[in-house]
Length: 386
Ligand SMILES: [Zn+2]
Image (cartoon, rainbow, N blue to C red):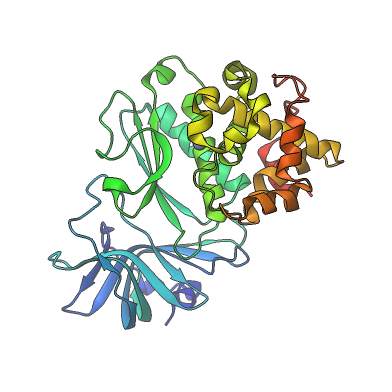
């Protein structure tokens, strides 16, 4: 029986009361697998998904044996992995599986389920709601107010900018800690969507929260969350790693719009505009590169400047403010650009070539004045704009 059918029926007598295991475990003595956390969905956002814990299954076919990755690459506090059941082809991807004696450790095993023996907990996630699963690891070095606000921000973002799980892209750990405490793991640092290196073939969100920002109630201690969340949204659609201003500009602009909407602070003028450099007027194309614009793009001031001008140019074409920002923050990424075709995507979505856009930049003054979005613009208006 497939998960979806079982969960719909929700047999109460199958509830088990095991504590949640750290990861998925294969027990050769009974030929059963216990999945600690599993998400079942079809990746379409058009149908409901199901999240369940401690699901005990048997299997009848191994489609891929995955890769072995010794030694264990995720010591505590790395959170337990999530597995994904693809309802379209009925295949289960097990992110990480061990045996009780740890003699087998495999990553990304794909199997066909034979039967579901039981589960501990399940919930349905309605069609259209964000079902991508963030797994929080919030260090106790952070004040409880920060941790509570973080959860509220994430709930706001998942409501307004849903991210949909799909095979190979369905979950990510989030590590947050205060900068004067030890990082949760040696290979985690800074504020980023990071991966690789000593962290192995995984991605994670790193939120190193500055001690100074906490002590001084600086809003960046919160605004970094929408910024990094938006990168996850971008990456879930587009593959533009290394392209600077079209990744960082929209993320830093969204960050400032979030701050305006939720805290009533003009973060654009306070924290981004002061770093503007003439270089962005002279050579906007340099802002495609981190190395070439680095010194001249403090707090992404220039990347935000280009984003604000793009929104202004779209409004001059006759689009409403919310639609202009929707085209930049949603449509462009949903078109799935990559590093080979992004200039074509740019021209298609914005109805102007990249070079003609760049040629307009020098007509502007080096200032955000006259370019800032209205205070009424909210993230939900942007993402639902018609
Ligand atoms: Zn960023």
